[in-house]
Length: 400
Image 1 (cartoon, rainbow, N blue to C red):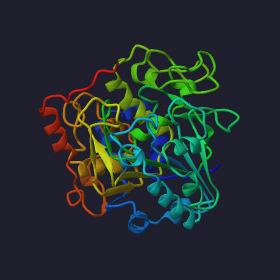
Image 2: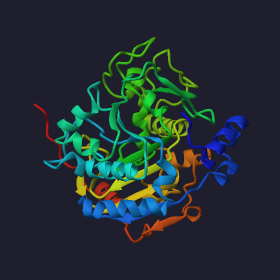
Image 3: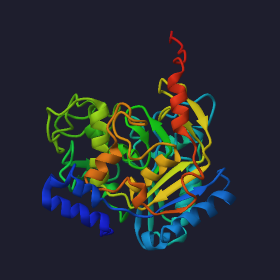
Image 4: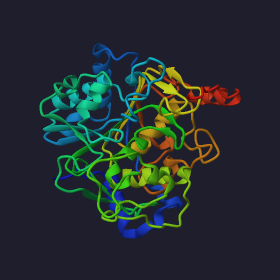
């Protein structure tokens, strides 16, 4: 299936020819692509407010028709963790799952713009069950998304799924950790790839936005704790601890790590693996949903003083690094921050690594922002983080 050829992808192909010499160089940073980013206030998930806000954002980016008309669109959503995890009694979509109203709104607008087929993709925790079953467990109605446009379907990408074989996607610049990935066919069998994330902090990677959302592209049948040794397992079992810690290699049928003696720390490995993934599977449209979310981490299992939050904002852009840089500014963080500076106190910055690999710039001075400015819609995660970490740690009960 023919893919879109953007300036970003052309630069990646050029980087592949010239090898990894640009990675980490000032030339790589100077040439890192830039594309428009749109920012919108949106206080509720009411379609009467949500649809016009998202339509205006997409128009500010040049229009959805230019991107999706006549094309197969793949949308990677974020349903991290088991649906049994909740922050208090709040719905999952109000804290750490991509909200179904935002998914349905995007699907509807893409259908109106002429998308030929829309696949909504996710790798739900440790299961080969259909995505629809996972949505039902979250108390969602899958038909609200399936009926939002013609030819909409779901696929669980945590295993082989409906494909006959895994698709091998190569990292154009050579990769930091992995030279290539074996992924579910849906990540190759599309013309347009969309990363639709929730605006959150992350215990390992500092933040999880449109780039970190792509960590879930990796099927646990190959990259998980229960993956087969020689060949992929039939069904996923467990999480992606091997990618985090490097305590085992992927199934031998898939490309192995470039350097088995590289650091085994998750705060080193996860940011680099994320960059490898977004280079191997380019993101044409990044959407970060922050109407409602949570502070303190990526999900209710994180041992922090977690709180619900309502930033009332959506960010979208045509480059995931640019989009995440603007989102960091909305969250009160400096997108130019390096390891040791919030939100990357313990980890390497995936934005810096992506910039050095030529994926996109994180420099706000080089990014055109349409709609509201980050300062106008700022919800200060950074100040909340500083206050939270200055306070005594919250008590945690003992499981009996």
